[in-house]
Length: 326
Image 1 (spheres, rainbow, N blue to C red):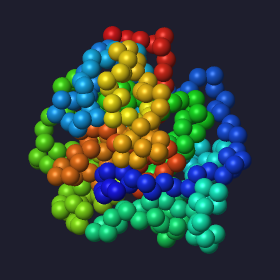
Image 2: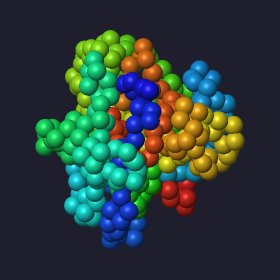
Image 3: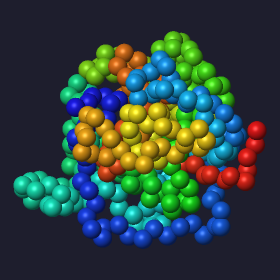
C-alpha cells in the first residue's frame, strides 16, 4: 500500500493488448533536437546518501560522461505533438485485456488510471489519462505548459524513442539535480524545503488530509514556475516524479559501476517480489517534508512500468559521448 508521494503498490494500470501499439515514426533530423536542453559536463560526483533510506546506500563516487538533459519535464504540448505525429495511444487509454485480469467481469475492464483524492487517497479512475488527468470531466486545455502526467514508463520510453532521445539513468538524474554542487541535499541547495518562500511544488499542510497550497498549486504547476537549479534546470525537485531508465532494486548501489552506471539488469522489489519496477526520481506535488521528502536529490521511488499516475511524468536526455567537457 502507499499514500501521497509513495507510489501505489500493486495497482498497475492495464497492460497493452497485443498489437495495440502502432509503429512510431522518428523525427526526420539525423540528430536529436537539442533545443530546450542543457549540457551537463562530464565529471565525478557522489551518488547516494548516508542520510537517506537504505536503498540510497552505499554512497559511491561515480564518473559520468557529458549528456544533454531537458530543461524541464515534457509538457502536455510536447506530448500532444508526439501523439499527433504518431497516433500513439497511451497505456491508460487502452482497454484492459481479459487474459491479464482473469475473473474480472468484462464490464469492469475499462481504460483508466490512478488519481489521488485529498483525504481519501489513491483511486482507480475510469477515463483518466494524459488528456484527462483527474478523470473524464477534467482536461488539459489550460495546462499545456504543465508536465504531462498519467504516462507510464512504456509511454515515456516511446516518446523518447520518437524524439531520438532517452530516459535518464538514475545517476544522470541525480547529477543533474545537484546543479553542480555535489553536497546539495535538494536541487536548490541545503535550505529546508519549508523555510522562507516555496522552492518547489510540494505538499504544504497536514498530509494527506489537507493541502494548504501555500505554493499556489494544488496539483501540477507550469514548468519553470520555481527557481532553476545551478545547471538552469527546472523542477528537478517537486512538481512530478520522473521516470528513469533503470530497473529498481534496493541493493542496486552495492554493485553499481563506477563509470556511467546504467542500473541493474533486472528488478526486485521486496514489497512486491513478483512485479518488475522502474525507478522514479525527483518527488512531486504530493510530497511532504513530514512524510517522504521525495524531493531530496538522492531519494528513490519505484513503480511498475505499465502504471500511469496522477503525479508522474518524465524528461529526456541525449548521450553524446564525443561532446565531453570537464
